[in-house]
Length: 270
Image 1 (cartoon, rainbow, N blue to C red):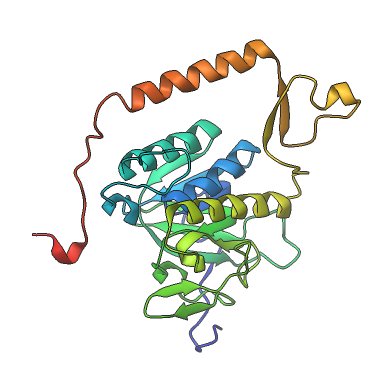
Image 2 (image 1 turned 180 degrees about the horizontal axis):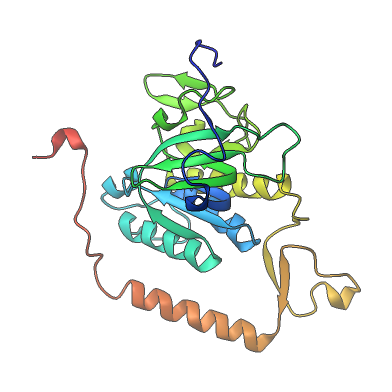
């Protein structure tokens, strides 16, 4: 029972056809910069990660994004979102274009069932996805969390999820990232918090995570140190190859104006 007396939403593992359920390590709800940053970190370290996105990131309304590091003269916000999505996919994350309608706890997910699915994600397309970890990264949309016992919803004119600095909520395995976790309404801040949530999940998953760093050949091994988990050493040829590929990709992505039209606030749309 939730704090307001409403029944807690619990999904039975056999609800419907069990064979129709996908199983994931991480499901990220929301494809803005916070959710995509979290997905990059979890996917790069081998967690089976799915981003479920309805395509409504508020960043699409920005006319020209001018305070994100690395773009001295700014960047088209829709282009940045595309790049973040491409980066998450390159890291190994999958993407599902859908709206999450409900996040429910799995009936037999006791406190000691840390290795099994804790949640079932329901979408408007009829998808049912079991997951061990879930990241809520949907700005101020919280309806799909209704009825989960232990989730604190804060009403400050807009809705937020009560979470600690690293995105942990009152429900084991459920995290909030970015604006939904009351972070400042800035893309760079929300992207950074999404990354922090991703690292927090890796720690909870006991991945032996040190840090995600591509180091030059010999950086660790020439000091008689093993390459830490999450890191790799690459030689000069591999470094040049990766750099050339990244330069070519950026030239291609910015060769022409972004094709999507400028969006604005719904209240001023014709």
